[in-house]
Amino acid sequence: MTQPRLGFIGIGLMGNPMTRRLLEAGFDVTVWNRTSAKAAPLGEAGARVVGTIAELMETVDVVLLCLANTTVVEDIVFGEGGIAQHGRAGQRLVDFSSSDPAATRDFADWLESECGMRWVDAPVSGGVAGAEAGSLAIMCGGDPEDVEAIRPLLVPLSARVTHMGPVGSGQVTKVCNQMVVGCQAAVIAEMVALAEASGVDASRLTEALAGGFADSTPFRILTPRMAASDFDEPPWHLRTLLKDLDMAVAQSQRSGSATPMSGLAAQLMRAHARRGHAERDPATLVNTYRPGDGDQGPVPTGNTAGSGPS
Image 1 (cartoon, rainbow, N blue to C red):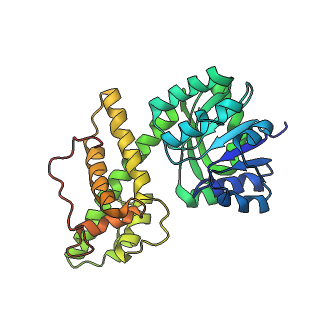
Image 2: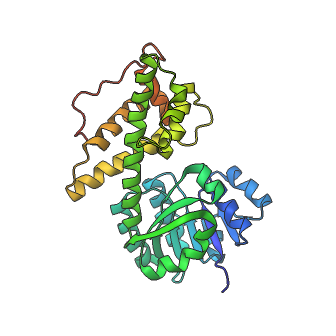
Image 3: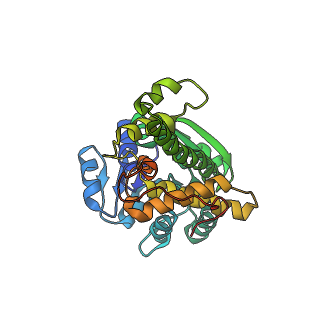
């Protein structure tokens, strides 16, 4: 079977290594990025770098998105000169971004009515390390025929692909993933600070708790960084985790399902972001509990557990 020709839009922390994995697997990949300098190195790796979305859409069968948030997805797809303006029936769109589930369902209907393209939401989990190793967990929402059609191009990127249901189901699943990650990040910060304040060497927590009920990937990533105050070259950003927790609270309001822990974690991260840490590692949350460390002081928790995004 002939491999589909791919277009990749969104060459950031995740998009760059994902594109490289696809090139190494032998796929024909065309790339476009708002900041063209980020896409240029992929030309040396074998990708075709173009200057407009129109050029990209002329020659691809599947367009892949890995963008910052729902607003950016909407702009790239439906904005002036965007995908919808240049797409055609027979092409598919695969959105690796973490986007709002309700908006995703609307986007899919809108895109098909505009140009006949089909939509698969396929958010990923595993971070930059997973993108580099091709070990991402990918959770898909879409028509079964569309999901099966794109499975071959997901092989170089993932350790596991799960079809969760119709369009939007992948994004709901990613929200569930981020609820666990976000709440863990918040309590890990408390835990490291408590250990330090009690005279325990926090750098040994990862070793001590390995294999126990508290062990997890966020625990293994965040705990040593918090203990060492190693916040340089963050593998992810606080603003991204906050955005996903806000989507969890919004989805809970639509579905009538309570999310008090996720709401509290979002408020703690929002307070930290407003102190200038939105672009920093979520591991910096530990400083909110360290007496006299930094300029922020402890974050009051109060009765914010049930509050949603501000």
